[in-house]
Length: 306
Image (cartoon, rainbow, N blue to C red; front, side, top):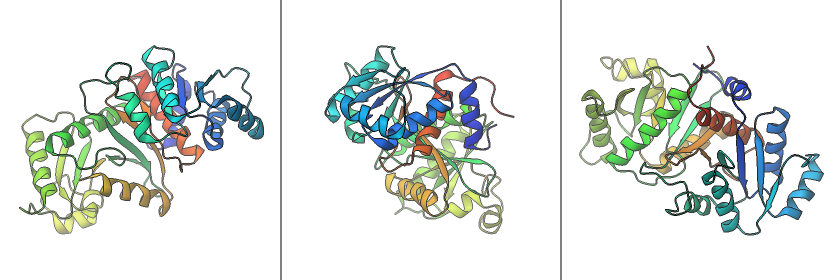
């Protein structure tokens, strides 16, 4: 099982080489990520975006474009459509968001005719490497689905389990996050949590153990769990944190990033290929981490780090 993002990057270097289509590559931070990935021999790239700007920015940061093709596209829509088309046609394996709006890229991904749509729910899972924990946590959904209902939460969890399995998590524990550990008629998320626990017990959500409703401390801290829910064997041991809604998930994610200096890697699953939906403000290191995670998901279940 992987315990750090460094291990994920190392494993990605050993996997079959994948091609990443960058939607909106005319951005210095994105090109720094491409340069870093090339230095690690992590992947091949096709850069989709404003070709003159890409060439100028690449020269400024010392990125050689000798073996990196550029597909010219000037506006966000054409960048997104062209990058998605490369994956749909099999020229590339992974889509990386560059300097385009997330909504624009997702519309291209979910286009019924030319995109990467499947019957599955599309959702975002982030892998968090938090200083001092010596392990990885998964958090979902922190980027896409605003107010998921019960069925959507089950689908979000299913996508997160794909990531967990790829990272070698055996029978991971899911902590369904809420305001309280008590089921309350006016708190829908606590009712959803109880339903997810029941679905898991009935075999409807296989491959994991689901606990909740949990406040964050009860989900991850054994001491808090022992005081508040002493009879719950899953409390305090969560591997996957299922947020009640987008606001809660996003705030938790960015709190960990900016206050705890956590490192992260994020991926959108449910489409025909991994989509790396990093924020425009993310560092190039975060983008490289996401590339490595996407490569592991794209290449399937091969032996993980011990």
